[in-house]
Image 1: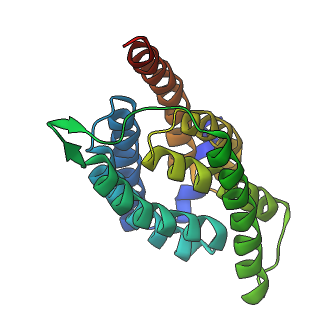
Image 2: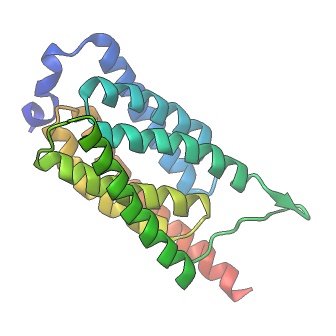
Length: 206
């Protein structure tokens, strides 16, 4: 098990190991803050995603690199959206997706898959089985990040699915620290869903 997750680090520079460890810490902090509906989810998330873009660029995983670049942009949007205050209260509250938002979400998911596939094709990158999984998770996480910016509880379901797929994927790629991070993410996502669900039920009673 240790060899599966960490064997690839024998030939990895100390700088990259340190950077991956920073991503590990700030990524977990970001999900932890998100579960508590704390706006610090975005600055901590920005640190993690910007460094991850660099690491994935070095590793040649274009789909995930684009995904994390998008995370960085969406974090800025989410930070702005979550910070809106009117009458002393937050404008954006935890809610469920409407039928219209679900339909738009499907469009976002499909567009993302086509976009990432197009990037692989245009850069003449050999698309192996792990890349197709990468393309799928890109679509899932794109949509999850968008729903999170809108405080839609369904974002947690998407994160859970994407995390469960990403654990073996990242371990296979030799990014063991990030694979362990996704295991921690999975636990935090379940906790966050429960926390948001309780908040949502209380607001629906009011």
